Image 1 (cartoon, rainbow, N blue to C red):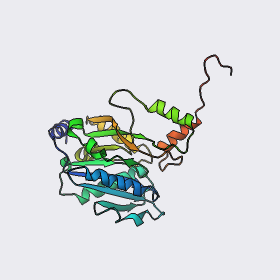
Image 2 (tube, helix red, strand yellow):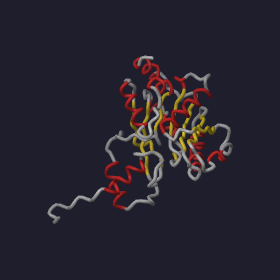
Image 3 (cartoon, helix red, strand yellow):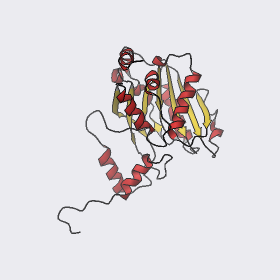
Image 4 (cartoon, helix red, strand yellow):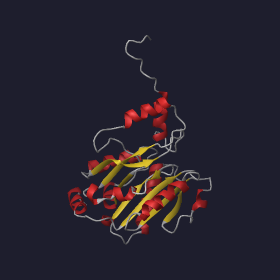
Length: 255
């Protein structure tokens, strides 16, 4: 489907999507998943249309599958053996497409977050709000760390200085906080099987296809400051790189 035709169809919709699907990739996240899923089920209740959550367990050996069935019939658990976050996210949306084959992709909204993240109650409502993002094919939010436990105050200050931006937009891409029209997702080719940076790669393909990407710094998700992340080069690696950065000497100071 050509990008111009796709955009025209989406901009014409002024109501909430008929179906929303949230995909959560998880590798040995048994400790984090309950809080993540409780928050998602709360966010789902705030939308007037059906929401399904797909948890994709990737190469887990921590009894994460024991959580299946505890969060209601709209939270689905599937397992893969990919050891790859890009392939895991992609598997979640492939599962959703097969599960809801009768729903037009043009009427479906996809979102994704991470297992160590906690969304706000209005996360989905804001993401699909027609007054805020009426013509958006993709919406990108930001993350915040409510409890800094693993890094020094100096690292926290460094992170906040580099992260903050002025105006309504921002320059960040987080797999923990992004959503997109289902037909736009399939038009762009979906998530690729990348060990890291699968979220950034998807944004680039949306932009190359001429699709509309909205960046909303008020759309925020709480995440952890763990030092050992699941994806190489991910958020945890970024925080560790800030910890390794030496402070610049003050002007006039000796060597």
